[in-house]
Length: 151
Image (cartoon, rainbow, N blue to C red):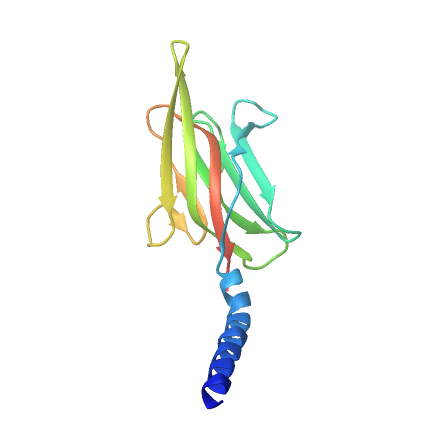
């Protein structure tokens, strides 16, 4: 009889511990966006942009400044990251960003993919935001952003 009680208590303990830890593991879960295609801005010569709402307070944003653009941002640079609509720190942080670039040469289209990780301090990352200068006349085509909730 004692063995049965001990086994039942052990099962109950494991179940309660699992329920208590479930919300913690959910908060650390990494989410992924679909392909976010860069769309040309109204000027069609200076910038492309992408946005996606995560929730009512946070979004994923990105833009590309064309090489000949007159802007406060560096030309030929792509910026992408998370942002909070209201003042304050973002609720979410980008952990990995995959950007596909494309260029056209003599009627042929060439693609290149680059993956950026935010697990180590790098010169391209500022918090959950990335800035990168594509090489060889490539322009961003789409981005996939992996993000998780900031604790």
